Image (tube, rainbow, N blue to C red; front, side, top):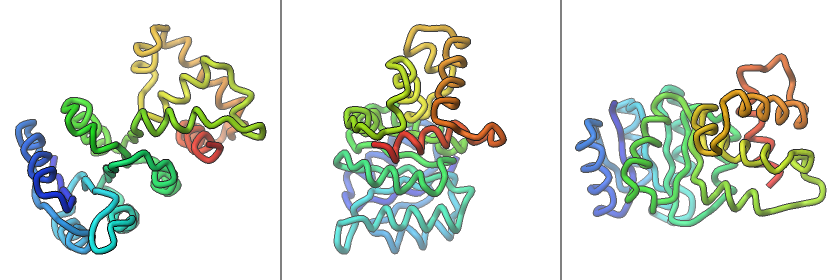
Length: 215
């Protein structure tokens, strides 16, 4: 696997590079700003670009904008975005372009080495990863007109884990229930959110997007 890292904090960037290389993942380039990230990503076409949301010159959302460009221009390159703070609007903005090969993590997760490496690998495989803190914040925002109100407590728990990128087996292990029970809950979620049966391959993505937009 080949990775490009973009972060204006040199120590964090070097630390991530070392973690990745020790795990057998090749870091083909590093960048300190969005322009350099785009240039190096276009040149190397890595499996994953790890991107800090806030980078020079304004330190607002240059990394996010660069991530969206990468997703449009290089659809086979996964994007894992890192943020210092819980900013759910950025997670929604990323996923609205599709959830394949995209992740959103808090920077603190980098110190949780296995979680960080698992996220990189998942994104490289075309999966999606959302930081649990972002998911928890969204779940905590109840509104009377939310389409999620029809879901039971257990179905919400399953949907939260789906949003974090977990497959049915992982959800079953986390909730200590059977995979068959998870399948029933997922089916109920699809039905209650009125997701079209002719889009079977995308209904998990649609369910997560419904969840994010309702938060």
